[in-house]
Image 1 (cartoon, rainbow, N blue to C red):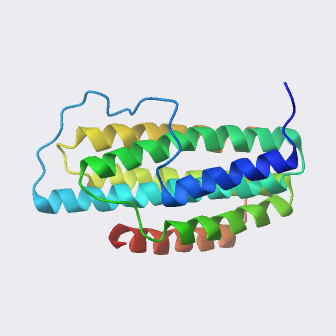
Image 2 (image 1 turned 180 degrees about the horizontal axis):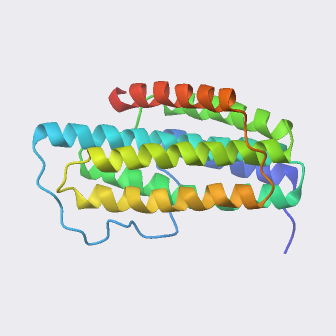
Length: 212
């Protein structure tokens, strides 16, 4: 099999970026965990809450695609680049699942997704330039923070919404595996002040994406 060139990777990242930011999202390879789960009866307030939470998670997956693409583009080793690509491929499933659930809820992704993608790609590329251990450390810290916010969303979802709950639970499991992959691959743990800045930035994104 021919090894992908830098141009091949760039074109692939551009294609993924355009589909992630503007839709429709890349097709997932795994079926939605919601499967045949019964559709819940939601009143208008519950529907708006669930849609807002799923929009946040969809935007988070747009950002994940961009971060991994930026990091893969600037990775020093082929091994790390391949691990980033593998994780990004799984995140495509998350993107597709969230988009599908938003559609079921009669809602749409964030209108600011192109902005989120561009900013996240830049951050990912910068992390990659810092070196593979730091880039992997960024993955570990990001995925741990995503795990925490998914747990929060699982608690906030309406009790009867098992469709959304199944999706977020599988996403949480995958994010934990990505964080462990980064540690096993030689991640350098980021300093606490850097992680606090990352958390603050993520909180701003979540607050905006919930409404827009």
